[in-house]
Length: 576
Image 1 (cartoon, one colour):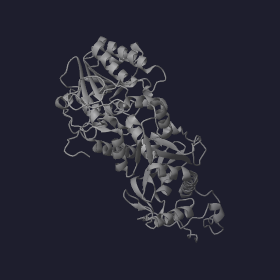
Image 2 (cartoon, one colour):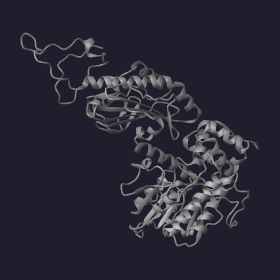
Image 3 (cartoon, one colour):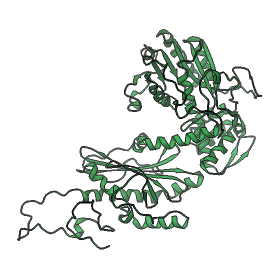
Image 4 (cartoon, helix red, strand yellow):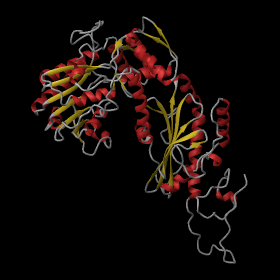
């Protein structure tokens, strides 16, 4: 990290002075489902702004923002929808691009920008704020340091062209030109992450040595929010970036250092953008067509030549090391705040079971799990009929320790012995209490990361694995019973992490499915039994004896623990 540089902090809180931000101002955000827009809207909400979001499919944004935020349907290619969306708006953020489009994205970008500029002028919008791309091959002449100039890539040329259209044909426009944005979800950052995570040795083409001036996503959001009140007229262009110039190779090495892996970069003078994009499509989450457009842009240096933004905005961007550390920290926070079952539901497409069904697994499972950022996710669900959330959660709260894991306990013990042999904690820690749980408790080779009674248990792995792992259980009440969602999440560390996940995936899948079935059986067993029917008594009037063991379900490793202060069930524990 670069010490001595004040930073804007996570989001915009550190340098944001909200006293002069009028609460009556109506702000429109386009692209609210995108990487930048999705972070900008909460930042604007935090300053007390009235926010309106323009979305082609409004239902995709349901529940993402504050109830006070208005979501309207619209498309930048539909002029009528733009007129309605911009009515009454004082400031509009333009965060639209067509880089992922199969069509001629430059022509599409021009049409969208022109429609938006004309509609904004008609509706009396006072200012447009546009986030563009920084390139040293165009714009102001260098005022410090030598830079190599290359023809702009089609992607960067289109970003500059959009800014010119907005500034020339629309209301006064502030254009912020940013270099590489560092943050979980950024295309450039995901490209770097994908390469480092998957390849111990990387053959690096010439574009990896291109110089850039990366900036953290939190600092970009701070610039965007402060642009509401900066004193500027006409078409004002500000170049924004971090305090240090680095190339992509240096970014890869810094990311590798922070996640604790060593990577070897072998430079070569070939690998065209097309070949590089196809190669990236195999080893990173990026689509090949997006990767090629991105690599075309990476051949052009993107450094700040005009430092005006540092004097006009109260933002002091973080250095590269701190930006990467913040991105990793924020990603962990996002995973902790997000219900994994909701976060991955769009990709998994799992459907709840029909009434009357119970069991583990999803009808539309996928081998190898699904991706959520850099993480791999495996999820199963089961419906416990006629059971409350508290009843369905009881076996989850009692999991581990002497009771075991409801399936394949010898496999869990074997894994614990392997972990001990590798220097890990193994299964010897057990549980602090047979029934009670709280955050921070050790649980075999897991640790309780989050616990909410009758709703959620999240465990973080402390065994030796090439990455990080979590196991989460959620219980959601419904009309027919309670739905149990079991989610295993693995964040692989390098190539060995991927080998570990996919190599052991069949075993893990078997164990997790069996464990969920065992939890459902135990929840049914622990649920209150219905009253005995009339006449179900012995000759002496005593209750009839309990059913034989083979009718009561599978044997347990130990007798069930009972809640403190509750009487025993009236039956002797079965011997192990």
